[in-house]
Image (tube, rainbow, N blue to C red):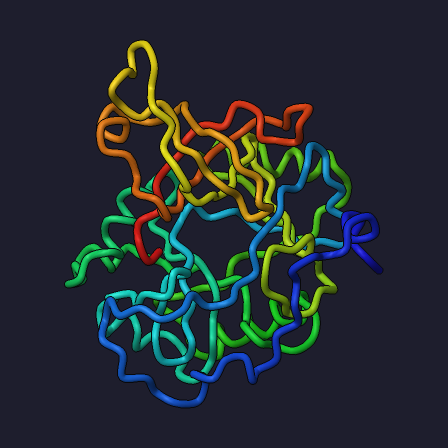
Length: 296
């Protein structure tokens, strides 16, 4: 069975990844904390649309955390840098087994988490509240449903303390999906993730994985600065950005006074929100949400 979106739009960047794509598995790497390599290949989500049908998907909460990959010996941010986590936290992760998930404090605590995990010297006491919410076995064989079950079994067999599998559930009908989303939002959660249960392990941005939120968001790279006018004269009026589809547009709303005076440098990655698209196919009402910290 093929997910509805894939019947219309085959994945353009999805690529099945074999274990050979993870050369770090099975051997230790002597990289110091904070060191950076090329960003690891990860699966990235597409927008789910207004009323997606959850049939065929496993649904989990979308954690407002920091993406991190455990390669079996090191924990890295999606940007490639090593996470400076306490030794006891890393010791709780399975040696030789890759995991993909989100470092997470709690709903609505992204800023606190981002500050915590980027410290060169980890705050041992603060890390006691961090949970590594794992939703994938990188390079794993079988379907996503089968990998999720192996992940749950692995956590039980190891009596995992510093990580846990993200809870996956099957929902029947759009009303059930809507009710689950409302439940998460009422508890100050961010939204839901829908992962096609029969999908192989893939990387890149793919319709195998969808995100469902009340407001759409995405990332883009800063490629220029547009001068301000009126009250913003002498400052930056908007960021010129380019998304992963190659579209270039301006993001002017959401910038703080400090960001207008000293804007994010070219090459920075920002997260923006928008509501639908214009007649030209560009995001409508793009608003700056946050600047992604280097390396994350």
